[in-house]
Length: 407
Image 1 (cartoon, one colour):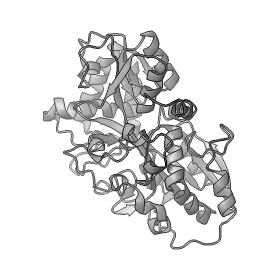
Image 2 (cartoon, helix red, strand yellow; image 1 turned 90 degrees about the vertical axis):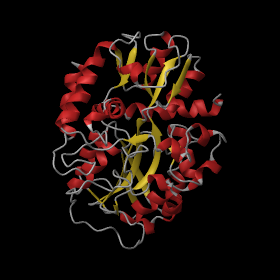
Image 3 (cartoon, helix red, strand yellow; image 1 turned 135 degrees about the horizontal axis):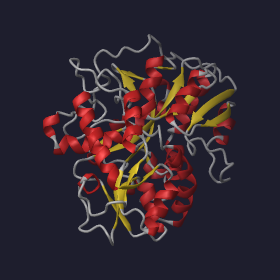
Image 4 (tube, one colour; image 1 turned 30 degrees about the vertical axis):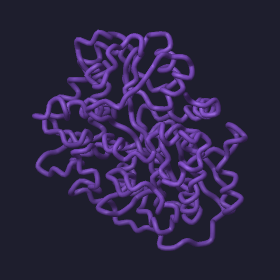
């Protein structure tokens, strides 16, 4: 049973999760059979940029692009403020620009007016490839040493063994269901992908092109002959299979969601009985008396891991690095995780959470759990699974296909 304080924090923090719809989220890594430690596809060569070699005197200002809930200054809730202590400690005055989607983040970073960004996995490679963010010197971020190894040097935050950011947090996309209606309790994504589903018209799905990866995860296990090794690295045949599955699923969809409040309401009133969700949404729905449960299905799932990245054109890089270290410090990272509703990235944060069961609920230190999660990543033409003999569908292809899927 979730505590009252956690519900209050989550309800406000979920303004951020609603923002993570559309073109946002985290990133994509490994299942038990995936090569999760590969840094980038062969042939992907980012611009020749260097990381900062040493800190200087704080420049007095920091311009931040972030998801709502990631850089709270007390204006949402006086008790929730990790910006003011940072300003007092460093002299860096923080200006926060909240971005509703990853596409917005990419566009804002291209202006050269911002210093750091909390990029999701469907934006990070775009930012790296365009040269809008530069490598990060992790030696200048002392708290990086305590980040869970499962989040370091991954395909969405590094290229060719070079770190391009500092992990912020992570979460899985779960299968939520009405416990009174959906019986027996599902253990597979087949309950949402089966064309003969008994829940026709009451299936819900995440409203984003990145949801194509959810279909790919399912096909990896159910159609092994397709040869899908990474749900974000789909050649023409694989991509067509995933798109066709989602087009067929569309007949059973009652609503595509990106606004958490609408998903909670739909489960409460019975308009939706099964579909994708996040742990924090499950918690809030259950606390709101909805008869729901959730599971990480047997095929695995997609998920997200956001990354703090430094702008190439930043004029405030010392302040930027101090922010990176501050935001993943044990206490602050715990506060952000509880407010937003995600597992913290710092292994020492679990000892700092208000809810002492929080990290168990969010599987913060359960690498076996997260080994089943393919964190959101940016689909690019150079296949992320390392293949060089084919071209994979890029994010533009995914966006076009998503509009066709929804009709």
